[in-house]
Length: 324
Image (cartoon, rainbow, N blue to C red; front, side, top):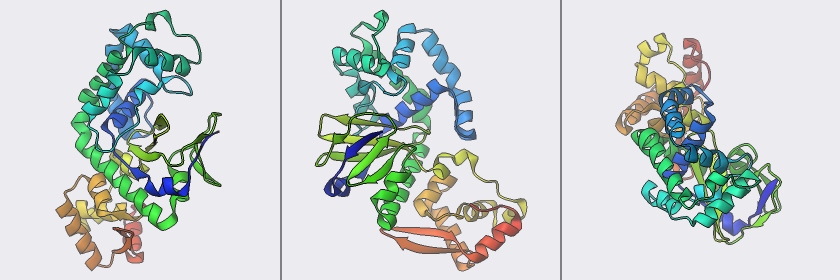
């Protein structure tokens, strides 16, 4: 297993950041794999994968570059520069484009775990990779970025609340398969047999993405990142439970949808992200549900979480919506 030595000060200074480039690279991985984890991803693949495959079919060198760069157990480092807080997609992809060609080829040798194919012995690999990421961003991510950003922001709220309630160990255990807190200042970052790294004193960031994907990256010994798939109930927005007709007639479909979602505690920000409703609308629904005794609220750190009360559970169960 791969693990990092992390002291308490490094964890205390760590933070969650959003990265349009990481979201784009995760989407590239999903396009290349072609297998969605839930109906929303499968719908997205049906809409965008044909264009992606056509692009690669017309450009065999870039197609080979992608296959080599994604590797089996290791991603070519120049494809995934460590995310920086507040960095735009354009700023991030510029770091891919300006990677040294010799470094790109060396990284591909590592991801392939073997010799570089002759057709990749060239100096334009960084610019080709950047152009492909720009395609994925413009065609498949940017049109939906506002919604994705809300989902990612909601995940950060949920993780921050989890830190305040249960501590960093609980968060690290739940980021993605293969991550867990081992104790004694050791953080397992994946299941691969890589040498441990001492990162105490370095900058550490955690970066959510909406596809079911994840990886780690670093810059020298100064900056490290763990990219992880965001909370399932958020990412799987297109797969929300349907609202029973009777419950919708009683409360209104939008308000009933909020009640159904609150089988697990959620913040207003999360509800806005998941439902697609405006902040004002969600706030009004919560006020009515609070006044009716169907939901309750409690503070967790800096966030206020809402959840169904026992009465709310009875109403939802009676309507046949099941537990959230």
